[in-house]
Image (cartoon, rainbow, N blue to C red; front, side, top):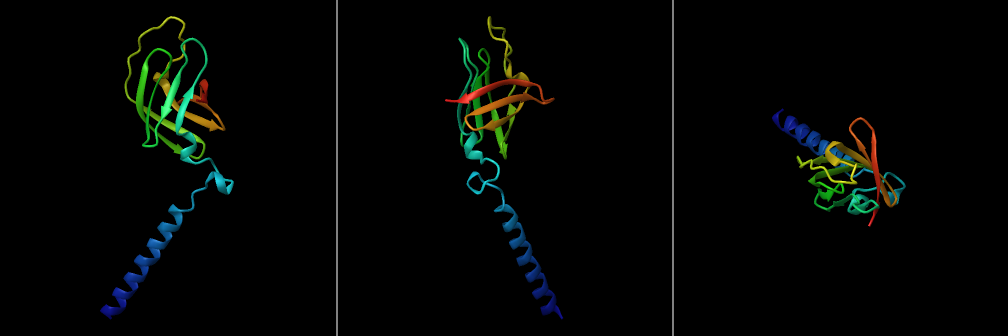
Amino acid sequence: MLRRRLALLAASGGALALLVAGCASSSPSASSGGDRSAADAVGTWAGTGDKPASLNLAEDGSVDGTDGCNKATGRYSVEGSQVSFALNPMTLKACLGVTLSFDKLDHGTVDGDSITLYTHDGTELTTLTRG
């Protein structure tokens, strides 16, 4: 009786491991026609003008950049074509000619060589292009 229970437990554990592994490998990729992959967000994104905003998204999930005046650092994560940001507290000095601020930056949407940045309530901040 004990052997049967151990065999059933082992079989259940193996089935669970296969199920979890199958779920982990089923995420869509750009090559399969699904959402864009995390690698598509990696790189430097920049705006235009005299004091352009820019963000550098590193492969390790770190982000740094500037809104044209104040420096920003933190982490980012990607799900599909959406990039979510968790920026560290930053200074909020005023700079002449700069109206953009990353202090409310929440997420962005990658579309080819551009990323549109938004606040948590969906207000569009700006669009940057891949550098």
